[in-house]
Image (cartoon, rainbow, N blue to C red; front, side, top):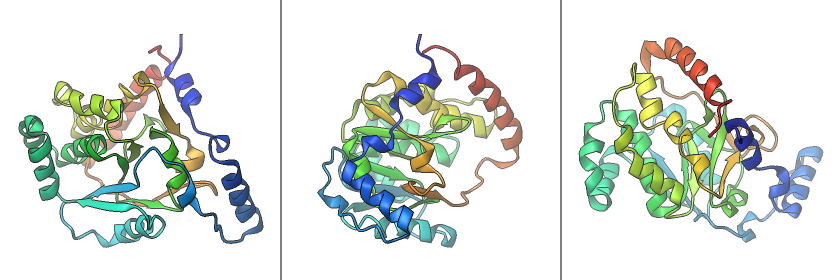
Length: 259
């Protein structure tokens, strides 16, 4: 039987999944330390050129401005949709009014931040990016895959960046499953992880065909990475150490279990 870890590996993107001439130009740029000038706008796409980001207000904290601006500068042909608490709630009220009572009653604001991204990607398609994630190069090469999530440790996958076509089944399934997973699961940290965050996503992505995994090579600190990471917010408070220990033990078991 297929294990979770082997499923991650089998769906992981590699350099060879990207256009050959793109990789040749990128390798030359890296090896010779010269500017990368490949015209990525000519690449075929499935995912629309839209970047979604969210924050409480339009006043982005100074520590995240550079990462936010990097995604705009390196993706000038993209439409950038910035959602505040107010505009995000209006979007849910207008397009998914059936979910509004659940959306309003989440005990932790981060649960609303998590949940809105699934609805946005299902409705519009595009790429969701947390504000503490920077863009190191154009995201155009990643738009030819219908849906993807990044691989992380120890949680398996993350939802701090993710992408899909509009109306992709994985985003529909995530959006429709939020109410069934609503509740409290121990601490605030574990509640968010299981109710709306990475552990919530982990339960669904492998059941949909065509969902790919962005490996650390494309997501972490390598010359081939599309993204960089800056210090995020500590919304989880003092329970994080105990929660992470519990999460690590549960995930270590689940990563070895069959689907």
